[in-house]
Image (cartoon, rainbow over all chains, first blue to last red; front, side, top):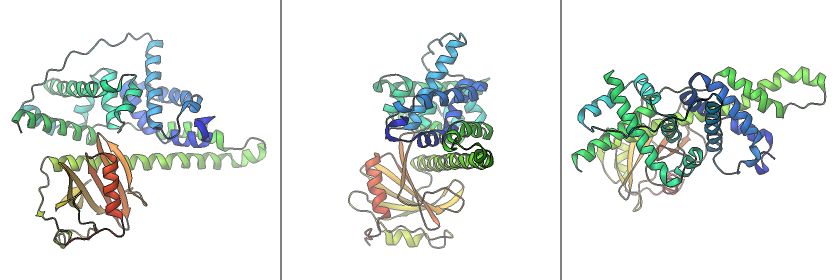
Length: 167
Length: 223
């Protein structure tokens, strides 16, 4: 088992090398529940290692498990699905450019946390360098919709930044 | 370019740079990594049958397993940061920082231009060709360090090459290591004391082909 030709040790070692990236995504999705989410993600990943296609992106495989685990945990806790986010309304003016130039880490973190988990995930998965196909697989959507989801998420983030700096 | 389109492009580039450089990262704690290594890497590595031997070797086996896991994690993170830095610098270049300080298609004009401007000589032997013409160079910074910036092109795409002192940074030895960061392709490698970061929005195969030309011992050196 373990990933068609890979030893268990190889799979575990390679999978554990992504702990930082997984924890980062988990923290932005689940806040203080990040460690539990990562623990459960690894438990599921080890159990599903034989479904990992050798040569494909292991990090994307793990992100998919993490996202599904996050959704399952939210359901178990009785959380309702998030309502759809409103359409972003961008001003695209020079004031926005000034705002973006002067951002500090806390600004962008707070603004990101105001988005829905799906939008947060789209932005963070893109930062991790996943391809469109890999992002589609992780997010459970058609490849053709990844670009529009990402573009919408980034527009919402810009809007959230503007509102956050106003408060 | 239409002013609104230019403003939109700049806003997107600034957002990308802010996400790459300023967004706080939340890596796994050492305790969590040790717990995971113990549960998964350690468990498959430690032989079961001889309990006495296990007892004696358990501590070192767990420590070794943790090392096997933790070192690649740090290395991957460090290289991710290098690749992210390369994209950030490339985005700055696209915004016009730095401007080319020497505009030339001759590597034997560009390389000597750096003399006296940096405390190292950027070893770049490939001088461009019809597919990847050399455009010029400038003194830049890369992750806060002085760097030689050499610019090439591929059709309408710009290709940024940064060369800097590699001490303390995780540039990989051996052939260029390729990564995709936010749609940009990045190649990282090390030769001697120098680190090389190549970044562009050309596709991965093209950047790999270009990196191979840069690292080929028989690279052409047109005057």
